[in-house]
Image (cartoon, rainbow, N blue to C red; front, side, top):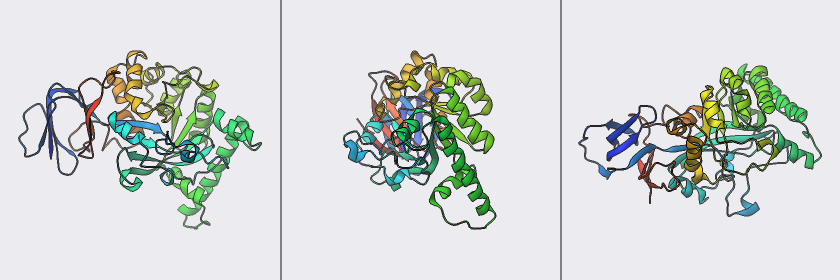
Length: 382
């Protein structure tokens, strides 16, 4: 067991506990959180004068599929030979040896959502993994965790260069709608036990049709976001999450009404594309105030993974979201979007012990994680 003593505990969901104590059981879960002294035979960690946070969660990355030092040989996130490849699986390309995993831990990030890029209209299956482990099998928390899709500039650019469908937004919508129609038909046959001929792409979309997985849809422009909602939700009744959502503030009331979450960002880049020209640190705050469930992303390697807390600080102080709401955007909000909030995303008794200890608030540019615990074990010490 591990006992963290006398720290300022940011529980996220149950307020801030000053001079608090956390007892972590041998099962890797939080056994007790209290202002009172806890007597237990455990490894003691003195957190006096320090701050304790839940492990941070980056809700959209390509970590492990694009090693920064690897060059083209390590770029495995986009199979840009067919605009619809739902059968691709991120776990087959993630490199646990990517040094960026250590960078993530150094910033208190214990969990990420990672998967294919946005070159295809439907890119493949994504996964939720821990940021430590020697094999992908021991890192997995949930696999698959979503199916990557993309609207707008990226698939248009890729397939215009190849002189094949889709080269327009109409073409992108056709590929998307046609694939979902085939998946619906395949699912109906399976549900009736008619055993259709095995099809890996359709098998990948089967849990989407059963509402067990969401479509994670890359889209920046407001009209692309609405097209994604119209086709995925209104035509097929499917669950979806909007990725990036640069212009989502223009239709934030619609997204709130439709109960469509947004994973916003990255917000530290230089807006290199036409579609991201309106990128703003105020976007998350505006979405949150409108009632849209909002999380932040680095889109690593677009923004280095360890910059998630720094980006959050800019959203909090310059974007108007405030510390409390922004902290939720890298803890409990992504956990809710990822459907793992019963186990992760806040410091509560019974939840998995994922947490970090800081000497300064992590939103500060000079803050550094001093110690990180994940799954009840110490996985990083500065």
